[in-house]
Image (cartoon, rainbow, N blue to C red):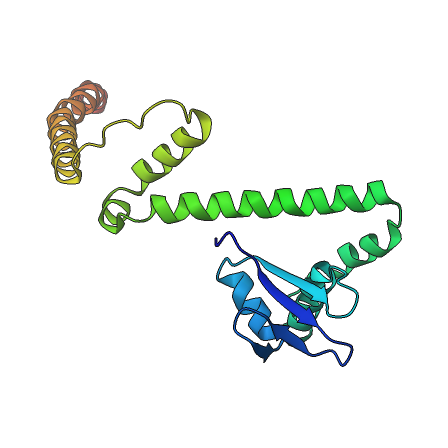
Length: 192
């Protein structure tokens, strides 16, 4: 973010004047400045009153008019109902906290998904690391085994298990046959 705010003067005819570039602008231009991370300050041209909050709210309202995915109607009702200062401050704190949490999750997802090959070959390790960083951020992340080595180890384990199953099959099939044989001999003796 730049240290100097972009100062915009608002005239009685509702025109907005960017003092840095010496040109008239509109609300979309101000929204673009904010999205770029620039600090914007809107002042009344005659009185010098700070109109930044009102102007940013107007931008949000214009966006909500164009896109149906604005703030939920119930939240807007609660903002109107909570006319006392403490209620509004709490709602604003809550919204800021929720947005900060969203930004943190987005940042973690972005950094966690930067290694696409690791995600494709080992999604469980990504989740383990993500959960590990959430529960113990002061500890350094564990060394990741090479995905190829991990795959070879899993294949070897699978082959070992298949070999054990194959060895166990003949022993199991022999025992039931030997139990049935005496029963057949007894039946043959009864017929005689």
